[in-house]
Every structure is written in structure tokens, then in C-alpha cells.
Length: 392
Image 1: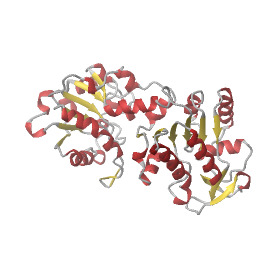
Image 2 (image 1 turned 120 degrees about the vertical axis):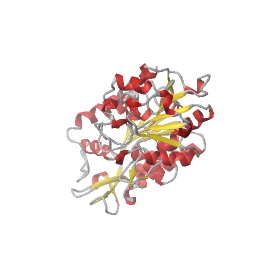
Image 3 (image 1 turned 90 degrees about the vertical axis):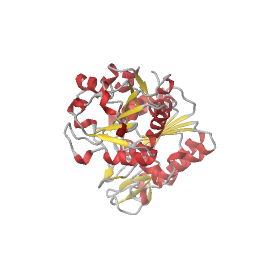
Image 4 (image 1 turned 135 degrees about the vertical axis):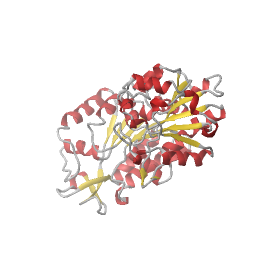
């Protein structure tokens, strides 16, 4: 896979740049700028090389129809301030655009094409649509790792029509993920949360042979507690998860991977309740398990302390209520402490986990924070990503 930083001459080259700028917007205001901050390196790199940049991105799910509420305009305005450069948003029909007309004097060095998902051809991976996009540029750069699990026109098909390169962020993402899947420094630990164990079983099964410890927290852990004969009250759990839990423990024994799960918990009667510490055998029928308890936190900290690499995906509890955020915060603080002494390599991914570490302002205290979502998870499952395959 070729990286754009190794291209010999980008001066005045028209670069079709696929980014993921699908950020949350409320009443016209961007509420989380993490993804915009992540693309600044590739923008600044191409500007320094005097390239002409044609940005392709999407926001939301317009399902192939124009929707003014899903315009890229707020993102263009935000990025303009960050880089102090004029950005032109082109809303014209993509099929009517011509390469020689794009960069007239008034358009400067950067243009954005309006939300690419306004065209149904994008998600259909349409070849003619991709060919038209390709006709606007001299080369293609994919710096949207988070979209690379999608076989969409601006991710995979366009690479068939132009010399294609990986962007800086995409390469950084792949490098970080390789350090927790193939180029591992041991001991290595995975802390995995979320509500459904069925959605993460592929990841767990793929990581068990490579990892020393898998720590299961959040709603997922309730399935294990229930399977082991414990009362979990009104807590979230999946039906028919017995087979999955048995599979996890069987595989972990075969590969000498330790599976850790809560030894004590914090419960409430509802999501807005105050927290109460309970041993696993003390949970009653009206309880909701909403966080891990102090004994569990202590055990997790000991595992982190002995680890050289850690992967974290999914909070330990219902952190939206501060009464049930302590478990997640303590995990974050334990990893950050090791990071500051340069004695651990840490990768964090998942929207909820990022929101959590943003809340306590430690997002820059991990080695790598992934905003990739689905692509992040599919890579950890060991799946081939169409967008990466297209660049190889």
C-alpha cells in the first residue's frame, strides 16, 4: 500500500481526498470536533505540498437524497477557522463538474463536494459515479479509515480509476491496530464493554489466541454473571447467550487467556438512581447493574499495571449518570498513569469510550484514539476491509 507522504511531486496536483467528517451536529453546532481535528495533518501536509484538494465526505444517512440539514457547510466553516484558509463548498451536480473548472482563482486551494451520500450511487458502489469523481483529480487519497469497511464508490470503486494512496491518519490507524493484533508487545490486555456480547463475540474469539487477558465489563458482563448462576435483577442481558459464554471460556482455556469479569458491582433501581455497592450474591430482583464495584476496579488496575499493551473498547458502566461513571474513570486513570511513565502502549476505540475520555480531558494521554467505529471493530475481528483492500 502506497502512502501519500512518499509521493515525489504533489505540486499543483489535484488530489481527491476521502475523509470521514461525519460529526455530531445539533442546531447547526458541531458538538464533537474530534474527527475534524484528526484530519488536520493530511490537510496541512497537502497544503504544504501546494496540492489542490478536493474533499469528499458525508454526514448522516440521507439515503441518496439532498437534505439541507445534512450539509457539510458547518464543517467547512469550522475547518476554515482551524486552518485559516478559504474553503469553497460546491453544491453543483457532481455529474456536471469538470476538472478544469474546479480551481478558478476564487476557489483557492481547497474545495469540498457537498455530502457524497446525497447520491444513491455512492452507497451502491456505482462504477460510473466513481469514474466521474475520478475524472476531477490526478490522484486519490483515502484518509477515512473509519469508512473503509464500506464498499462505497468514494472508498473502493474510485481507486480503480486513479493512482491511489493511503492518507496519514489511515496509516496511523493501521499502525496502532497492528500493535494490538500482530506486532504485539506482551503481556497484552483487552478491556471490552458494551451492551451486547453477541456483537463483540467475533472480536473476542479473534483476540483470545493473541491476548493474555480479556476483561469483560458493561452490559456484556451480565451475561457471564447470569450464566454462572448469579441473580442480575432487571439488568440488561441477551437471550440465548449461554452458548456464546461457553465458547469464550472454552477458547480461553485452550489458549491460556485469562477472562476477567465483575466480582462486585454498583446497582440502582433505575438509570437516574444513586449507586450502591453490592457483592455478586447480594443482587435482588429490582436491581440494575450499572457499574463495576471497588473490588473489580482493584483487580483491573492490577492487570493493567502488569500489561505492556492495552486495548480498550467500551465503558465499564452507565457513565452518563456520574454515580455510575467511577469504574470507567478509574480504568482511564490507570492506563493514563502507565502511559505517562512510557510503560504501556494504549489504543482506545468506540464512540462511548471517546466521549468518556473527552469528559475527563485525557484524550491526548493515550497512544492512539480511534474514531473509526465499525471499521475499528471489523479490523479487530480479523476481517478484510474493502477500503484497505482497494489500496493494496
